[in-house]
Amino acid sequence: MKKILITSIALMVFAFYTGAQNMLVLHPEKAETLINKNIYGHFSEHLGTLIYGGIFVDEDSDIPNTNGYRNDVLEALKELKVPVLRWPGGCFADTYHWRDGVGPREDRPSIVNVFWGGVTEDNSFGTHEFLDFCELIGTEPYLSINSGSGTVREAAEWVEYVTSGNQSPMADLRRQNGREEPWDVKFWGVGNESWGCGGDMRPEYYADIYRHYAGYIRGNNLERVAVGPSSGDYNWTEKVMSGLSDKLHLVQGLSLHHYTLPTNSWSGSKGSATDFEEDQWFSTFKHTLEVEEYIVKHLEIMDKYDPEGRVSLIVDEWGTWYDPLPGSNPGFLQQQNTIRDALVAGVNLNIFNNYAERISMANIAQIVNVLQAMILTDGPEMVKTPTYYAFKMYNVHQDATLIPTSLISEKYEYDGEELPAITSSASVKDGVTNITLTNVNPNNAVNIDCYLNGVDFKSISGQIISADVMNAYNDFGKEEKVNIANFDVKKPNNNILSLEIPAHSVVLLQLK
Ligand code: AHR
Image (cartoon, rainbow, N blue to C red):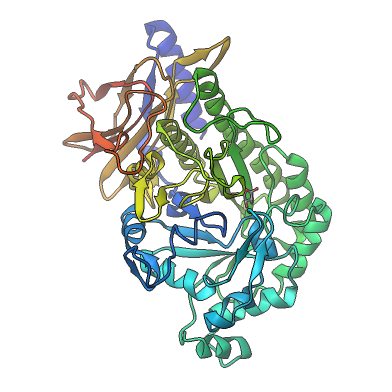
């Protein structure tokens, strides 16, 4: 770290004297941290049309499906290589009673989804349906336990139902419900946003609740995740970590939630997903980039109570949150997704990669039809969003080794404020070096020199996600406007690769 800092200072001095504006220096000799593939994780809540309609339809529906799972969505998600999927919430998780969602469907009780549109939840998609779905798309499940309105017994029995291979009341019930073998579920969250929709708790109280639950969540190699802060709520992190400091063997992760709202206001308009000008473009990136400061400061607090760094940070909700799609149920959190969202994804994923030493998972909200979705459906139609393509492009970093970098970027200025135009991260896997870059400047391309000393390669190829206008999106029944295209790269000169990153674009370089 110290050497990288010295190199960065040397770089700045060099840049000062040569007038070079934008430089990215790779330090392949320092590559040692694995980028956990779960940083590319997702989130699926019983919210709006995510589960019902988005993933799951009647088996006799006209929409082609396999046991109720939409074939088009299954294929798109398999292709995306979803490493981990969080379920059933979100706020819904702290109202969810898992026993309502197992056994013959016709016998399952209904509940009202009080947080999301007040609609009736018939529990036809429950534990078996979710875990079978994860098997179909090849993803690891991450279950959120109800510690808001549930009980410790209910939680302990869910863990037993899902993971026990013994003869036991819950394992026997699972077998009776058609599943002989236990599922391999490693990740268990204790509650969700317990400072808000998950019980309005004070951090001291939540720490005690966590202690109570965590001791009953038993099994081999289970990873328990405690509810962490929202954005810059350092008091929550301080009190929860202090309350758990003598029980750190029971905590494998602390969550962080940070949503990007263009207007930064939860009460008024959050801003439109598609109909915006440069003021909201700029503020979107301003608020999304704030996550780096939150990560640094929360980690500092965590380190005080956990000097060995045993507890990792899990950003299990992040992404853009706009005004609801006009005409839609506001409780369904449906929104379109533009090239701006592809950039938000690229910026955040670059930041998470660069903190891979302490961030072991991140889950964008949410996978289908809700907030910054990968996929939107409308009846039988489906579109892949710009965010889908950003994730697809960045998948090269999954389980790759992070290459530390030093970056000097010019500023993107708007109305007297400024942001770095470029963000980046780099990794190496199977002999291929991957560099991802974003240019958030919507008006100008950025010329940047990448210093590749020490990188072993014979050829370079590139990919790009860009668009003609800053609010381009993919719409139902129309040709895709935002997709991945080839990006031509010139030969490096003395190991310096000179690039022009177009306005509002996300770029991947692969050196083989
Ligand atoms: O993702 C939508 C909601 O945002 C989740 O249910 C909640 O955890 C957060 O406030």
